[in-house]
Image (tube, rainbow, N blue to C red):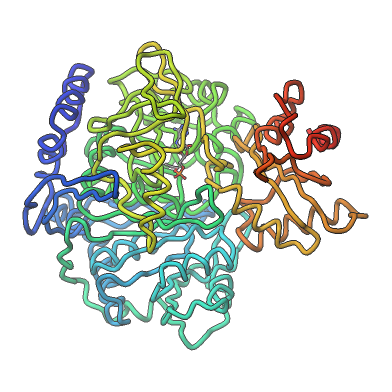
Length: 632
Ligand code: PRX
């Protein structure tokens, strides 16, 4: 069994042991899984390349660990409990036995459609059980899944399909979200028409049953699985074979495909799931994330299923039919662990306490937060109205690249403090450095957050471009992984994540590169150049503030703003729409032509008092214009 820490002394002892001898520590954890061949070496690593191998030479299939391993002990226990968008529709559930059969049928259907080990399969689906089934079916046969969040536009989807040369796309007909019925299949059709030549088949899951246009390469999910056997041998995978690709944004214009591999990801997600949520047999666990993001991969699908948990999947949105939906679902399914995002907490807090206070939340034991810093007001509200001052909040810090939770309180074991993700998980070796890479020693200090030793679920490469992985994460500081975040270590050694120090903004927990948004804005025919920065936003955490230089004067500003937002929606998706657009005749630039974003950030945050030394700018006069035209 994966170790479950139960008290503070054990946490301290385990942490120390994991640092003194990481190989022995992780080997012990890995022993509890089914391997078809044991590893030859626990760890080989070189951060400078980077080249990291966990459980090298080991052979396994992660789905045998998620499913087969549980059949004799918990075959009839619910594995996935699905809550539909419309509360009047039926809940669906899959026991471990049923999930195993469904995954095997789908795996056989994939094989019948020419999908083999190493092929890439793109998913563009709503939060329906078939998404989890499809992802696991890929893992069953060694195909690499690449899930794209179904809020991205056709063009963003096409970029991701092309980057990974996907052989198949799996989608639904429509996506029922609140009162909307989003035509998912039509978006896939549009993406395919943008030159996705590698795609041989589009497999369509019938969700709402509304009409869709049918093309030669399309096949129905239900027809393809109909005759398939409910058993499928699991492909034997090397511990370091790719499990999945997940695209995320960085400081350049092009999203990168973060690659995770089988063995280490399995061990780490299961270990962190059991410890961070203190899951016990019989508990009902709910993470409200979307499987389109890493949180859904690690803590809706893999971590919980590896641990033999009952994991809830929710199709809808927190505000439908009203702002009490989350709490209604917690009450209805007697949720024990609840994991959500600060942006959802802030949005629900703003709607008023009457939506939460009327539900029975007494089954909750742990409540969690992920994706962005949780501000004190939201933390306090969560603590009072959801936790009733009795339940620990786990503010979990991690990233797509880390694969699993890295810094977090352990509920009931370590203390909690608003705004603090707190303490590293066992095996996680953190360090703060200054901009020159000097180690920041001692407590009550701030610095750039780095990790000095490998952990099992870390990023292995960026798909198709290993050098980019090295450059982005391993070149800023020698022999360390650089997170891109700034952090504060308080006097007792707890960590508080301050936010990104690179050109990445975090809007409602969605990570976005400023360059990506700028590229999209620049596609408007009247835009010459743009610069995007984040600014504090009450609900979203950060909003998007865009400074735009136009070719010709704009006579109707409202119309222009709408056009710019439409272009961004088309190129990336509605999540990247700028909140504020300021037209300007220039941008503050250094003599080498670099935009001085520091000034733009200050103006966007409503603070024009002290803009620092602007005399070194190429065009200092522009600062006055920008200040005067500020829209905050
Ligand atoms: O800036 C940090 C912020 O989200 C970034 C990672 O984003 P992504 O890869 O999309 O993964 C989100 C879900 C794991 C981090 O670099 N972040 C994530 N969790 C927290 C956080 N910032 C503060 N506190 C957190 N708990």
